[in-house]
Length: 266
Image 1 (cartoon, helix red, strand yellow):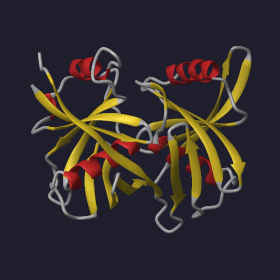
Image 2 (cartoon, one colour; image 1 turned 180 degrees about the horizontal axis):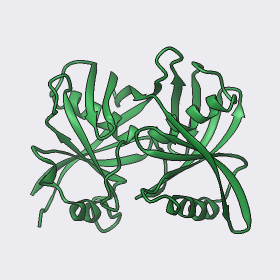
Image 3 (cartoon, one colour; image 1 turned 180 degrees about the vertical axis):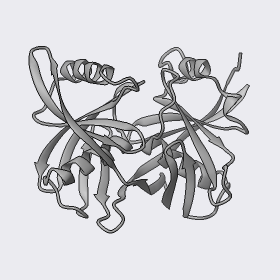
């Protein structure tokens, strides 16, 4: 049997497993366990591994619900930060966690229901904007990398069916796929956002997606550089801002432990 901890951040839920090596859990295990109604049910599996560098507390490896391995997961990293503090692997409230997108700084504030965690997502990498035609319509997307790829569109609210169809179509044009963000500026410092994640589909929240969207909004002049932006997702609120001095994107949001369980290994 394999022990696990279940965590969630704004409804983005994860199976968190302490492991000594990445091969401990296979993509097939992740697919089986993440199936809702037939498994534990989750958006992904987060492996907490020993760090490769002594400056970090741990290393996070992400497996999506379809078994694919994304470079980074903002909501997942907040859950891992809480897990490391909650299980006594660190007493610090300011520490580094390694990811496939590089080391990330975590600032944790414990709360009665979990923790509020600030993360540095690093500096965004802006790529050329592109247009995509689907179902007789053409829309323009800003392409931003937060260590993982994002395609951000600003416009009117879309139906769930439209978001699913556009998400799959836009992601398919790139060999590595992409996350797709649908954003609306509803106030000077407030965005409404829905994210279609590669390997998962439409989710309740996406931390790197919120970071990429605010970075794209700053670049487009929709919000100011350094201004704190309230990003409202279906699962709740993240606060996101850019640091004019370092160029980094920061986000702040909650993480919560849900329960402890175990699952059978093949």
